[in-house]
Length: 123
Image (tube, rainbow, N blue to C red; front, top):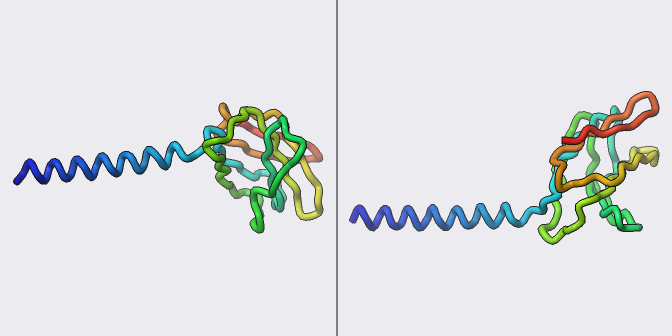
């Protein structure tokens, strides 16, 4: 009887491991966390392959990203490009763009803006 319980527990553990592994593989290798340290609320956020001529859709949708807040950006597992461009837009329509971000090597992007200058810290 003890062996039967161990076998059931081992089977359950294996099933759980498979579920967790498939969830991890469902995420893209380009996933990253974006931190807003610009001093302004971001109203639109676009992330597109560097090779694209189109910004596609606003990643935030109806949401905004207040100063001091962060958002997780997730990609499809099928996303292949390594170089990406990022564009943020504030309430007044002012925008800042960062190009050629190698999201295969970056897990965090912290955006800054001070005295008319914008920069990003990459980890």
